[in-house]
Amino acid sequence: MDLSIIFPAYNEEKRIISTLRDYYTFFKKQFKGSFEFIIIPNNCSDKTFEIVKKFSIKKKNVFVYNIPFYVGKGGAIIRGFELAKGKLIGFVDSDESISPENFYKLYKNIGEFDGIIASRKIRGAKILPKRKIEKRVSSFLFNIFVRILFGFKFKDTQCGAKIFKKDVAKFISKKITQKGWEFDVDLLYLCKKRKYKLKEFPILWKDCFGSHLTIFNGVKSVFSLIKYKLHCYLKGW
Image (cartoon, rainbow, N blue to C red; front, side, top):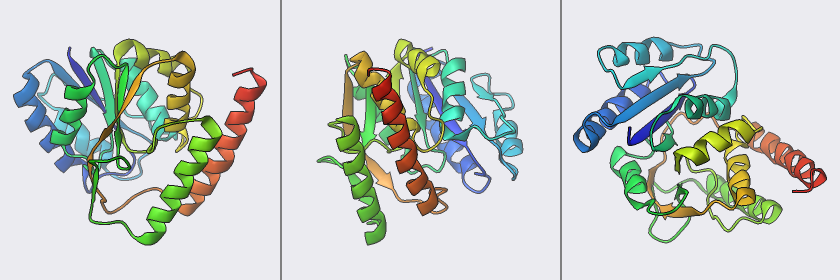
């Protein structure tokens, strides 16, 4: 198995089927049978689970693992890491803000790195359409906060597409503690402490409708990350 792609899904009945069809068609041409999809519906109150279960019928390399209670985006991805069998294991948002062609570019450019993360903030990246000023400002401030607090050089920790070598993904799944929107920061900080080499890669990102991220989530994440960093400091990290 060359590549495992994890799709965390929370109430995505209106857009996930289009994403899965496009990704499956593309990766079937690229890998034939040497890839797998792991779809993790989480705490869904709509028909997401029924839709993806129907999609998986007669596809031996598409697996659905439903989590009927809340574990967050991070919890869903961690479960995917545990189940995945690929030499490379990645995850991507289910809204197709990143096309299969652009996700494939991550796969092709990981090289000798331990992981590769998509970025909307470095040279060569594009966002379509241009985001509203309030989103740009809040995103900028959050990234500055994270970079200062954790000493990151990455300019975009939150972009929803990342790929890791199998051993890295399995290590992360055992050590990570943050399950909500703070998940990506926890993941990258663990990699930093482990001295894994990660590559930040420019991506074409589409600003899709129906985002589940709210101002409340953002503020909550800030306080959670401060608490998390304090915990790491007390442990001697």
